[in-house]
Structure formats: structure tokens, C-alpha cells
Length: 166
Image 1: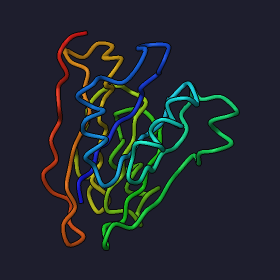
Image 2 (image 1 turned 90 degrees about the vertical axis):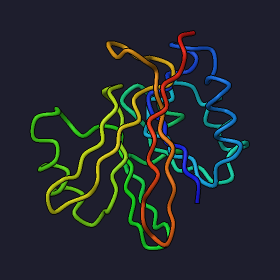
Image 3 (image 1 turned 180 degrees about the vertical axis):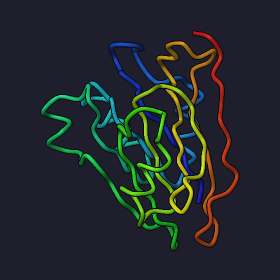
């Protein structure tokens, strides 16, 4: 199962659209995750239309229309891999412990908010992945997103993709 993982797209405030490279990945993926801060419902509509399957949550910059259609936390089971998706996890300090406590029933937690790529394992808890942002790199050297694979209920092939400057 091919995954695309993104967050903090902020379309159309930070970019008019997602990068073409990311759209190609979306078109080829079996499952697309979006960890919040869509900003405009039009991107949700387009991602739903182009994705084989979409799992998303709302973020702190998402208004009532997006919040009416998306949960704060989403949970899916991918052949035995228990995945949770949320926008915010709080400050970096203590993140692993907090997430291990809050998401003890997950094997993988996908989150956003910081625009900073993150990949760590919470002791006794889930693997934590933040894809950064494909449209608003903030203080990061590159705009980013993640791809991964799930085979037999196991996560593998996690790759952070750095996008060229716009």
C-alpha cells in the first residue's frame, strides 16, 4: 500500500496549489493522509476527487466548513497497522512521552502544525511522523512531504521528499 503524507498546505494563502510533483504522488497513491491546516475547502474537494482514499483532520487554521467535514483525530487500521492522525501534538519538548500516553493504541501517529519534518519513536508508544509542509517551509530549508509503504501491517520505505524552490 503506497502512502502520501502531507500537512500544513495552507492553500490558497501560502500557495495557489500543491506542487505538481505532489499531485503526481497523490494520483499514484493508495492512501493519502493530510494532517490539517488545509485553509480552504476547495483543496479538500480536489484531494477527495483525486485520491484513491483520503484520511484527513482539521487544523487550527481551518474554519467551520472544514471542521464540519473533518475530525480532530482520525484513526484507521491498515492491515493491522494502527494509525492515528492529528494536527497538533504540542511543543517538541516532551512530545514522545505525551504522544505515547495519548495515542497508546496507535502504532503510527501522523501530525502537523510545526511545518518541521519529524520522525521519531515514542518509547513504548507510536512512531511519530510529521511531513513538514509542501507549500510553506517557514524556517526550514525545503518544503517537504512524506511517502511510505505498508506491507503486511508494517510501515516501511518512509521517505522525506524535498521540493525545489518555487
